[in-house]
Amino acid sequence: MPRVILLMGVMGSGKTTVGRLLAQRLNWSFEDADTYHPQSNIDKMARGVALTDFDRRPWLRTLSDVIDAWLEVEDAGFESFDQEAGLVLACSALKQAYREILVGQKTGVQIVFLQGSEALLQARLSLREHAFMPKALLHSQLATLEAPKAGLTLDIADPPEALVEQICAALLA
View (cartoon, rainbow, N blue to C red):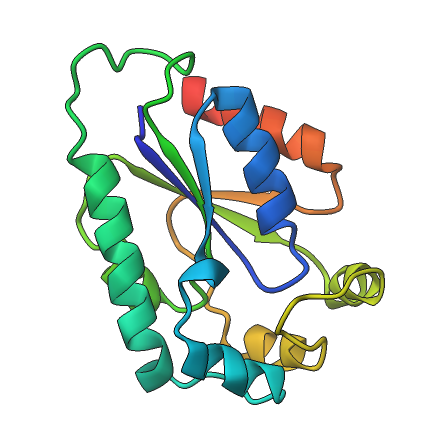
């Protein structure tokens, strides 16, 4: 049973929506990786400039520390979902190299990739405003995206509640 679920995908894939619902369902904590960006990254993205690997490195290391903290929680009694003993982390984690920094060889982390068509992502983004990420950054995220080879891949055309059910079913299988 994982202690951390890393929900990954590009902007508009539903990481925050699905993540909050999943955390509520599991009675786990939820964190949005966007809240860990340094101000310099936020300012850059707000100007519509995509982050570089160099920009992301400190942010990814901080998130890795967050994951480590959850993995260090004592295992005592961690047998089922009905305990607040886990973390759902919503993070773009676009490249394999980023996921290596975040997860590496850590056990207890399940990656869930929320995948969707560019048309669906564009439609979703047209219905929302992000605090500091303009819609134009979707193209750079799609260009950067490297689909994970391992983990669970889900189609975001399904409603968020159905995605939560699919994740829970996969974790219990």
